[in-house]
Image (tube, rainbow over all chains, first blue to last red; front, side, top):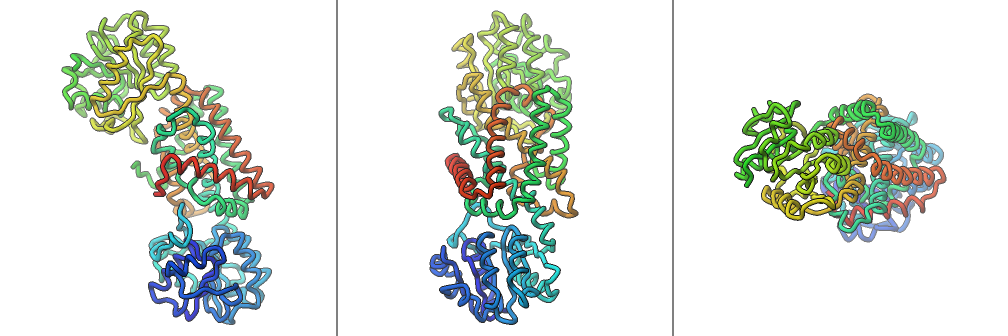
Length: 286
Length: 286
């Protein structure tokens, strides 16, 4: 139970966090700060009140949640130093952990041990406070990424608050998190955008988009995600993403080489390895 | 109503066609020929009888359906010349039309006007006669691709037989078909295989596959398709597929360049164009 929770950024993720906390009675007072969508979050009943600036929002808060896009969270965490109450627990919900963690190490000083990064694996193609949902995190995984400097008690508090709103927590250090999520999420979003863009430029035959079947439809579904949000995520995790992009490119090059050479055996072997991996992660075939 | 239908290749597609025909009483006798899976199709009750070879299967048939993989259909159609009854209607169900059509032009002689290529857009990741389903084509699109030499009456007969088992037909010439399907289906399968193979090689962190979410899961679902079948399809349509692969590669290169340059505006513009295309083909967001 927290006395005053400050939610910085009240879009889908921050708004859902606020709603979940209020619905379960985990906070006496939830104050939001979000120049872009704070008013809409207040109208949607996600927060009790709005603050005019960051310092006012976090003054006296015993929990501060940074739920803005990752590039904004980097600036926000830099501005937090000196504004926090002594006992304040701080977490950010960014999809990329290293840039925010680096900024925290540089800026938080004595408050650093009570900053614990986390990343809820939830969201999808919707965005904005209107899409917020108090049940968004129920049954979902939340990665908690303690720093070497993190106070173990603070890490456990952050894990327990996520569990209190229905999430399943898992620890992953910052660097591993960013490497794994470059592979399982960030680069695949770029691939989906690239595939949809290819189709947009290529399918000029009248009526041909009506021929798009469930396979391509599923492969490009996440290309409906927020373009600015995903540009930010990819830029914030550019190093690990480029590593994954290069590995993917090598797979594509080998497929195109085998096609050009008419090398059926090479294609079958490559596709079979791919199919085995996919079946291993859950072979439901629709 | 046909007297004798010969189904050459009795896997998912040929077996489902046979089952649909029998269930609706559209054929007095359905004979199958399929060295790989004919016995299993007979046991599954998809065909009335099996023939020992192609010539026996098609002897006296008034409908011949080539439902083997595309590379096999090319050889089958070459062997059909001289074996067909005068009134026989012939179609192939290959996912790539040009190689089979070329072989038909070379081999069928006086029977060529009654050969009409078709391509049912159905199937998915399952395969084999055990997955066959008399309802597989209900409500599905079937592309009918008449040749310049096709008898208009034969084209209409092929369209009507598909409609009789519940499909919606659409005409597309052979070259257009192969170009459009390289984009909407063939190359996306290669991308799904490449993405799954990248993950298989890359996700070595223990437990990291548990972190794969619905986005990547959907993007790699068709990587569970039959590796040999898809190697054949891609090889048979290598020209149009390579054209699409090159266009896709250009999209990827530009995204990686923008990431390396930190060019947020370029990424947002590219992703927004992709999102617009995807929303245009059906904006359901789950």
